[in-house]
Amino acid sequence: MVMVETGQPSAPLVLERGYRNPTRPGLGLELLPFADLRRRLPGDEYRRVHRPDFHHLTLVRRGHGTAMVDFVDRPCRPGTLLHIRPGQVQRLPTAADGTPAGLDATLVLFTPDFPPRLPATARVTDDPFGPAAWQLGPADHDRLGRAFAELAAEYGAYTADDEDSEITRELLRQLLAGVLLRMARLPGGPYGTGSSDGGSGDGSDGSDGSSQTPAAAQETYRLFQHELERSFTTLRQAHDYAARLGYSLKTLNRACRRATGHTAKQLIDARVTLEAKRLLAHTDLPVAAVSHRLGFSEPTNFGKFFTRETGRTPGAFRTDQR
Image 1 (tube, rainbow, N blue to C red):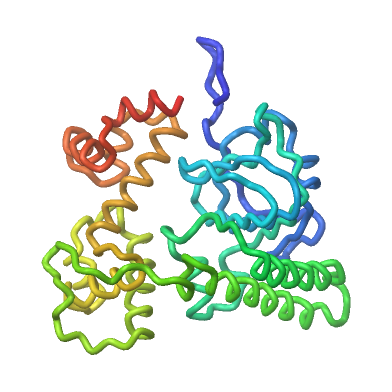
Image 2 (cartoon, rainbow, N blue to C red):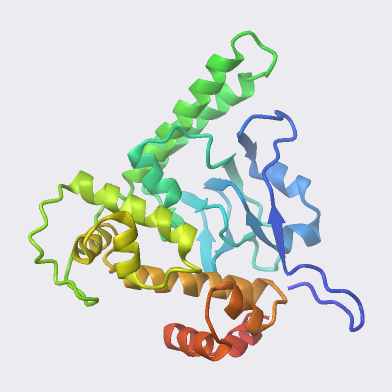
């Protein structure tokens, strides 16, 4: 946390970062060694909390450190893969003494619209509750390392004024899709070791006679994800999402449980809670303003909701974070 003297205007607690490729303007993809990122950001700026509007992949080969993604510390060591999605807050990897970590790692930064829109890749990029970190086994690390290396080789060959630039750009998009497809098969990913599909509340026991195929259930969940990101500050009830998407509540819950192990209502509340944590920890907005931004009619209702979900009041959570 950056401390400011009393009477001085406070700096933003989180740095909002927009995508910009300084060496290949107009390309929605950038690859760089971790050491280049350390040189690009001065020490104080490096240690601040960042909220990018682009995807940020980090594959670690050597070195150790600790990153933070949405209030969870993520140890980084050989074989670690990190995925920060647009809108998530992160603190870049640091050593035990708080200095930038000395990692040998490759970073892949890309805009949400750069990779091809495939159902499997969308499950990786669009899920706000998707995994943020994996500790890869040797085989997966080797496969991802080769995929990163091939992507880096084509990226290094790309120049916007080359006569084959459009072909190379499309090849980069497809190679990035290959990376994302490999991530989709990792344990904990949408096509890796699956989540529980057990029963839960919210009016659904899974016995609705739904004949949705796994692919149809994935599409139902994908549509719900999209609508949740668009509407979580205004729609709070699962049946409203089901009606908007044209499904029964039981069908929506079944798809959500198949993908995550949680009901639609649980996912809605988790998304609202996450955004509340981000705003409380990384902005100076008063609690009443946070409540209003998240669509609560009264700050007291927001306080009860947040305390129920986290076990702490909004004010106590903010104090703990700072």
